[in-house]
Length: 103
Length: 164
Image (cartoon, rainbow over all chains, first blue to last red; front, side, top):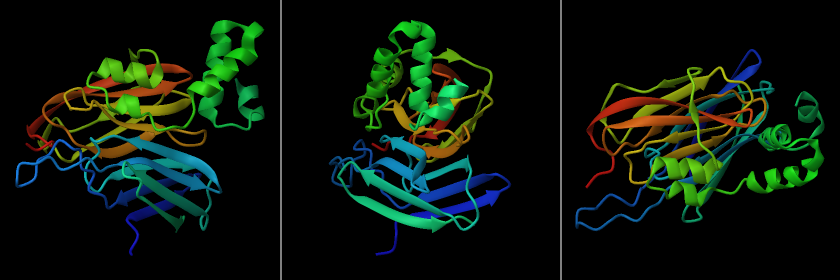
């Protein structure tokens, strides 16, 4: 299965800018389906970025993060060609992990 | 604090919390305070805070204290969001030693939207997209040097992002 995670990490000087898109329904549990029944909550709770085994960014998310979430941040200390490991876990225990090369 | 930063092989936010406690409590009970700081700053998902319906309660659960407004935080959000399901919100700050940033939408069913841990070396500069149920004053909380600061901006929502 194709990864749910898409990342673009680009070094610019001493900082690396990381843009991330994840495919995930991010169902809040407050929305009803066509039959008028609530769609159960299904959302990413933790998203972690690691560079050389060190967490550089950790996102804890609730139900209010938009569907197919996007997040952008920047950190220092990475070089072109380094690995950036990205992983998430949602409230149902589903997970995904992918590693990207910093450009 | 600089010395601590260099000598502690732990994430910076732990050090900062420890350092803050030292400043408050004096050197006599450093180790005791440090233990408390470690226990409070574990990396578990703050499930309780994410279920809060009131923003003051959510911030209290998350940080155990209240925030004061700061003009050093730049909160970027649209004046009017036509689609409450996808509201682009970003924050940057010139505050030093930022260890976490939280986004709160007081009019949402669950007020805490996102909580980001900022280790040393990561810039206090985040963009994300949030859902908004209705017009609300978006609040961002920045933890800097063990203190809490906040900034707010009202976003008018034309079509709510929580359905129903």
